Amino acid sequence: MNNILYDKDMNEYTVVLFWDSEEKVWVATSEDYPIVLESESFDELLERVRVATPELLEGNNLSATGTLHFKVNQIESLQAAV
View 1: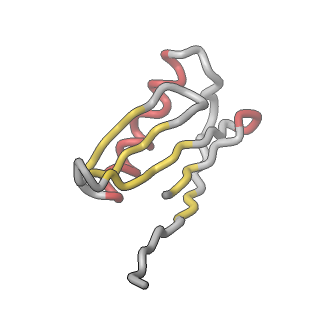
View 2: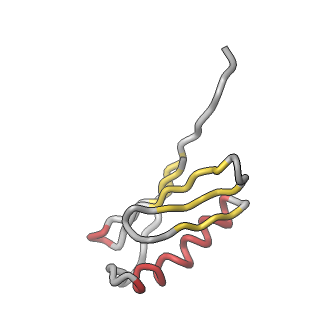
């Protein structure tokens, strides 16, 4: 699971990126603003979030002035046979 962080006071919100193994796509969602995006590529999903976020914030009357700052935290989930 990956998080893109946005601090609401500094044009930052949290977006969670995760791999949907059933659909075989990366998914982006957020509890801070309405966003649900999918992509086959992680890099493509990052770009889609970057492009869609300003429009989604504006359309939902959320703060979106100046520059949005992106910070990505990547968390890997692994399985091992025992």
